[in-house]
Length: 229
Image 1 (cartoon, rainbow, N blue to C red):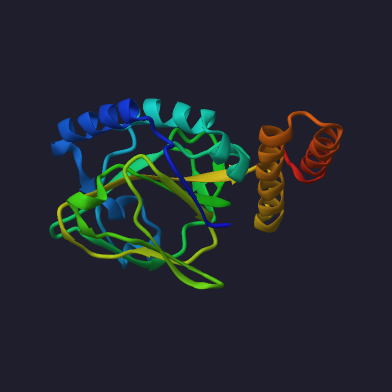
Image 2: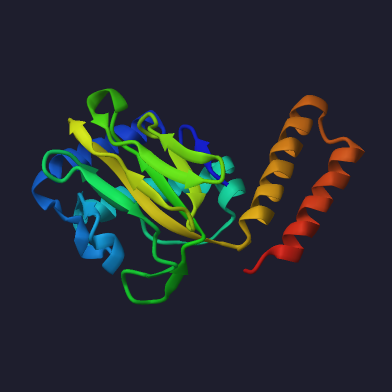
């Protein structure tokens, strides 16, 4: 499931994150340090170090925003979230060729692993401030090109071949991370998400009718059947 999620960050949260990023100018390093052998051959960007104070301050804003966002939770059904990382593209470090993310990522503190069921990018730069930089995701309907307003996110299957097109003006700054879902199957997650969104609309239109209660029970019974907690 490829899904664009608007307004993951409030304007105030986005402003605080952009201020932190502006102060972190000297902290950026070669993004290939965290790439696997295949990805390193096509990766040419910069990242903030995992353990830097700026990264931790940014994570402290982004993670609570994700946890409270109902659409993100419904789409991802997160069991584990790899702590978000932050990258930028521009100048001589401006692109990332076709690659597939590693299936299993090690937590930065070495305490465990996260299966990368879902990839997520949260855009942090105004798209009017840079040219290029589209996230291109290959799926069964052909290439999907994604370039979203700052504060918006996209989630897509970790199995997808994807790339970031060259940035030819300005800087593209974003957060990226992976999610291990309680429901491993992308198809099952899609069915649950569609049902959950339909139930939300039914409640808004008609309230807590007996039919809505019954369908809510069906949703939770399916989640109970498929979820691994």
